[in-house]
Image (cartoon, rainbow, N blue to C red; front, top):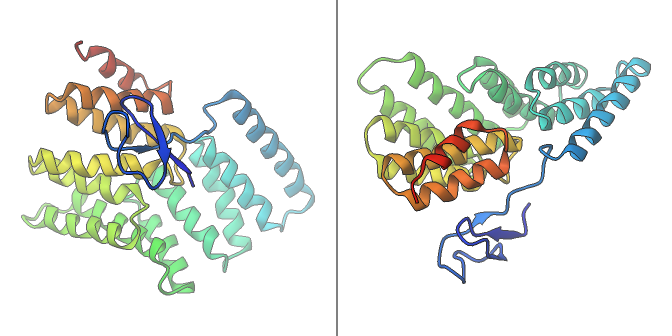
Length: 261
């Protein structure tokens, strides 16, 4: 977990317990985590994967090696390969609750949170450990997304929003509960509410399981909505953080460059 917060405006850093920058007064955003955007980190992960691939040839029934491989691919943002390794791990360790939870999380990033497999894996973990709130949150997250995508009734958005708020209640460190609640508010044209939830999603995302490039998309989403609200300075801050998290995010780069001033 990050020990410091960094101001997106002036770069001032303070204790994690601080709420605002003592230099400029802006709310703090968790310090951007290091990740495989650095070449040496990617190289280390590739080396780890090669070693694990050699190990599973020698010990094909060792689930923990497949799980470690899945984690490494996940950190690289190669979610499809991560899923393959995690499926092998959970087949060898069907009672490993954390493995099932991580498989559900990776599946959401790989196939979309509306994918029924997200709910399946999370529900299996929940059955093994009743009261596992983070797994329960993923069940609600998947259901909420299906309400948005597949339901056309007049109450579909309200039902979806209830699911996303259940995610936040169960696991307030899961950024996607905030993010998709923001999406519903944006669909309802309640933009101030939407940007508030998007901002919370961005703040939480840097302490979560998703790699930097996924976090960058959440920061870019906040910046995009601030642009829509004609709040250039706020947009600039979040878009700059998006680019810092993922220098390859061309959409964030283009939006940042287009902001006047």
